[in-house]
Image (tube, rainbow, N blue to C red; front, side, top):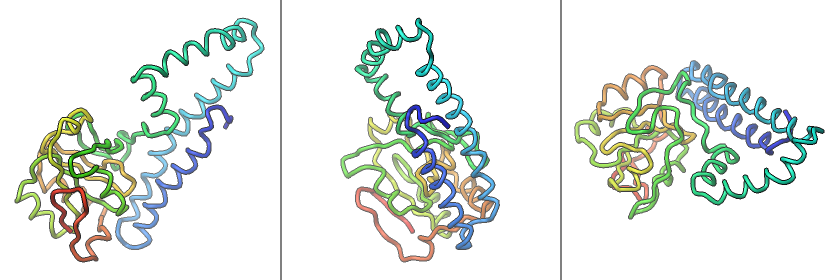
Length: 234
């Protein structure tokens, strides 16, 4: 596709990341081969949208129309400058250029909604008194996040699955990020939410994990604790 926006490299890396963790899980026997079927549906929709938008930008930039030329030279810089000097405009621009706004809600392995965050969304970044919620993502493995209090029964029933449960103290920042208090979020190795549930119902998570035969690497290791979280369970 055209070089407009410089999105080709970012898209290629996104494709590689999406496919790599799924291939690794299947090859290592930690997931059913059906997990691979989610690669194309998740990435192809964005690829089509990207090509369409970059082609439009390229045609606009290279247009020989006098009217378009005047707009590019005089009005476009002022509009861009004004937009990028607002918090909404700068966030929107960053989300598009960084591709951090990509979500897979319509994907075959995305399910549920809790608060404003749904399955397929990129996990919102939240900073708390004890650190940020992205620190556990360094494990590059499946995990569950709860923002608030973890129900003891929920924790106990999920223990055999070997999925770490990370509990973060509820905060205003978590609410602003769209997360739901005491809701539970199953997070994929790539940092996207797989399953979002407004209630801590273990059976819902057990069915999801069983459906794809998910077995995290942490199930093969001793229990560990991740700095910045209140609780961790392997």
